[in-house]
Image (cartoon, rainbow over all chains, first blue to last red; front, top):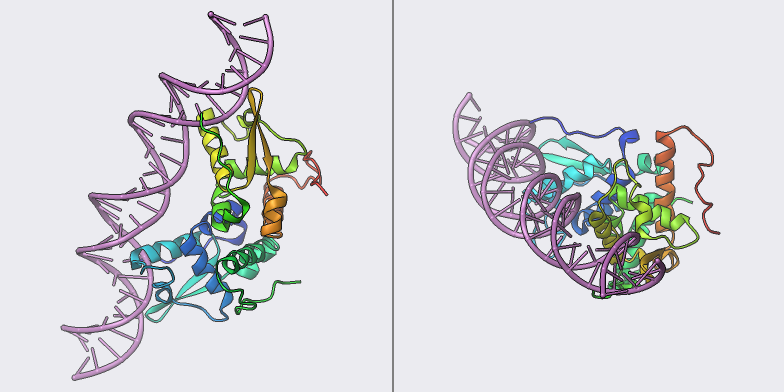
Length: 125
Length: 125
DNA sequence: TTCCTTAGTTCCGAATATATGAACTATGGA
DNA sequence: TCCATAGTTCATATATTCGGAACTAAGGAA
């Protein structure tokens, strides 16, 4: 199995990031990875949407997030550990990820009860 | 010809915005509309990319920007005037559009000489 | 070792989305 | 009325995405 590709941060594009996050399932996965302190394996997300996501589709979503430079995946034993590349992205495009996560939060609050804090890291500054 | 559809601001989604702006041509069009004080007609953008964009494709891109809630288009005589819905979007998702435009600016500066001002109209406000 | 289980990836065909030439519509002007 | 201009719509070729089936890689048990 060929090793996983991770783009250099300088090759990361805004369009690529926006494309990766323009899918509801992927943006939900990404938001959860960003929000959690520790790495997440892929199978944690089989039930992130209404209906179960087939694992081939999930694998495809993770590949797109990886190729966009949003996450870093490495095998840890039999699982894959997925961590966000937030700080790298933020160094290159300051505030971009935070603004998107905040917008998602606004959107989900509009749909549900107005949970005040949901375990998200505070926006820098 | 059926009248153009513009979503209510409350129906605008983050995913829709990100999808609309995940295409290099569309995001370039949108950035230019945001940057300009006055409305822009569609044909201004026939040459926004390396090669000329067919007008049916351009029409399609404008439709996607419209459907995402990013722009408002209205016929003025024989042309279409396209204006950004920036302030509405910003009221709903504060800072989102600004962060994306800033990221694009960082990206384009990285690709070219670091000219401080590049003839773009100053951001409003 | 060999076999089993778990976690993901890859392959490939089906479903969906995008791009574009051609035809059409709407408006303004000669 | 006829023409030119600016966009839209239609039809279809191309490209992406989805998802089942087969495959790969690692760990554990015996």
